[in-house]
Image 1 (cartoon, one colour):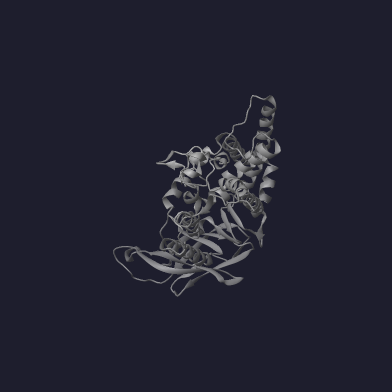
Image 2 (cartoon, rainbow, N blue to C red):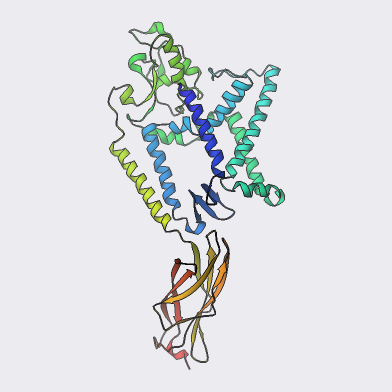
Length: 447
């Protein structure tokens, strides 16, 4: 099977997966969702609120280290096989313009479309219209990773109150039309920073699209083309100089020149060379392999020191994300003191007032209560157990009181540390321990 066909199957699987992920849930929790509306992050069935996203840094580290590792080992495999820009260009250029409307030859991407013909102008309008519709669907699918589909379709019934969402979708769709129809591969060549980063990560063991100069011969000398016809060869070089590999390149480069930042590793040049050389009973001169395996004929291993460091870092990120993710809090509790530090009652009792903010992050109702830990000199006043519905948040006044004279200081107020435990009565394991600061007045303030 040709690389091109393998890429098309990969595109199809990737597209279906990305389209379906927003609809996949585990016990009502999404597989992947970053909800700005509900301030939640869903990941593989786990739900994290915005103020407990301590797992996010490790996931981002895994993402970036993973990108570096994949680039070091497999080169620009992302660009040619999974990048949305590449997939969208294939849909528009090869499927819509090439196959459906017969505007261009898929095997010759260097030849511009002749728009002097009126029929071609009409086809161009049809092509842009079809891509505009597809862009709108893509934008909606992108929005589903921030607004779940069930909420999205409900919001569409009231567009006046969700105009930002609608404008965001339309903006993304218009950008995709401009990018894919007019900017084309120039986005990869001039705008995308990834191609510049990739070149730094390459070494002789990195898999890439390599033209075998041992068999084909050096078409370029000092980065300048020196061979224009196969009759100019001095020895038994196999390159026919047909330039089929050049005509089919979507980024308009000649792979025989060597590594170039414009190459997106799509391997269409390899397929073109396979077709030509196959007629001569020979293998392709363009291969997906490393410089060491193709040119230097050396054995390649992925277990280099650099790659092992990448692997260890990725494993560490997964372990740390798992450890911190396991410490998920099933309810959130914030404790804030009121502006008044303390009150001294007529019976010499001292009270401190606090504001407790409870947030039930579970998908079921919970009843919460409080108790003090290891401190018999203080007691809780004006607080009763209460029930919160799933996702509900509430503020409660909490008063801590002591009736004992502690005689701590004659000169200044004293801050005492007191441990408070908040827990769910249905599940005593669902609890949080907070350390409070109780301000006790200096001695001369007592009567």
